[in-house]
Image (cartoon, rainbow, N blue to C red; front, side):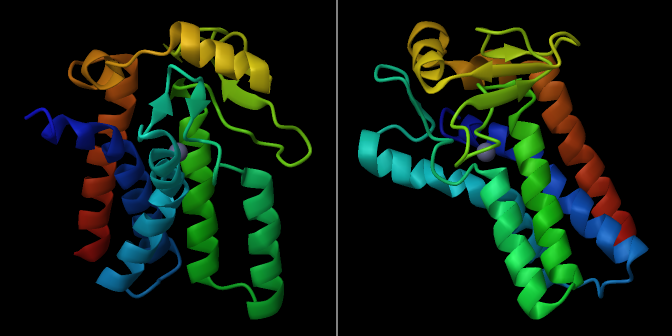
Length: 200
Ligand SMILES: [Zn+2]
């Protein structure tokens, strides 16, 4: 059970991947294949692969609270991905595989900027500050209309993780109904429903 609850935070991104696949199949008449759904799901998860590098470096998969290091420091760079996808579209032409991958990865980033965590480095490599949406500053899991944007400098992010990081975040926010779990489980349920409709 203790290991099983670790998959709970992954449900939101699964929902994003399934919703994007379903919308592409329904709206753009993409052939409904397992490979296509798997492709979009892979992109909805891909940025979190930096958790693996983080684990090798720190022994912690998500955040190293003692040393103030977040795993979102290796692949969570929307601007760099946008340039990369721009290049791919320039060379290979616009096609549903690239467009779906781009939408899925950008929705992953948007999801990471709302609710739990300390945001992501949206403007890297020009600005290494982390941006979070609709959250009070110095709160690890929050949804509030104001301020709309919160920025943590690299030093502030380190301080936030060390002072306010919660080691038991899965139990605290995903093992019961909270604003974080409701959004993520909602995304997952909508994802399962929409892909079911798309595949019928
Ligand atoms: Zn992420």
